Every structure is written in structure tokens, then in C-alpha cells.
Length: 200
Image 1 (cartoon, one colour):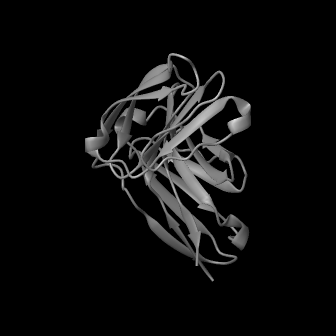
Image 2 (cartoon, helix red, strand yellow):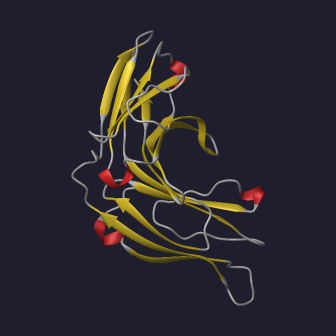
């Protein structure tokens, strides 16, 4: 059995009312906002989660530079169709960030995931997390210091800020590791991440 990982660059902003987000071509963004009442979404290639929690997550994938612009999340059921949130999206082509990385590992073995990130995120906390069902970022592992391994866990991380390179190691790989994974950087308003794990 082989396990193949494919990673795609993502941006994950925090809860917002009006925000500017920079994403990367080939990647995606996750927009999170609170709302009153019912809502609707009308986004290209998007998914909504946590419908019962008054929080809307819009996940837009496969971005390209032409997706840059202003977007609004509207309350379809209010009388005036009020705007719940406004998003200014700026999509860039980035030489540093690989759009797709494929890796394989035999069951019982280990795999190293190497994720490049923009120099502008060097000082930010780095993370790898696993998407599980409607939970956008379960089982998160993060590293806060440069050139130091994270504490023991399912995924161990090492951040080389001089090289702008995050390395994650998963040991004793099993079928249970089959999921979508993101790795990236966190700032006060956003996470930049990388995605997708498939089992063959």
C-alpha cells in the first residue's frame, strides 16, 4: 500500500466583517464569518459548513489571478439583503510556493512533507492540520520557533525560517492517515496553508 500526498496552497482568514486577503494561484481561501439568521452562498467551487452554529465557512479552491476582486456574503433572507461580510481578494503568483506536491510512503513507514512559504510569513507560527468531516482544521500541530522540532505528536514539525521551509514528519503511516491535510503559516488574520492527502 502506498500513501500519496498532494498539497495545494490555501489562505484561511479568521472571522471577519471586512477584510483583505492575499491568496496564491492554484490554491484556495477559506472565509469564516458569523451571521444572524439564514444565509446563502454563491461562490465558485465552494462548500459551507457548520450550518447550525451561526458561522459560515466558504471554501473556494483552484484560485487564479483573475479571481482577484471584491466579494460579499449576503443575508438572502433579510428584507434589505444586507451584507454580512465584505472580502477583498488579491491572488498572486508566488515563486516560493509549490502549487502541488506529491509524496508516497509504505504503510508502517514515515513521510516528510516540505512546504515552502513566502518570506513575509517567516515570523508567523507554522501549522499542519487535518481536515475531518465538517471540522476545517482538526488535530492541528504547530511550531512557534525557528530550527526547533515541535513537541511529540502525530506530526512533528521543524521550521527553518532562513530557508522559508516548514518540514512535517508523520511516522508509522497507516490507512487512518487518509484525509485532507493543510500546512502553512498563521498570522493574526489569516492562515496560509497547503492541502490534500490521498491513499492508493
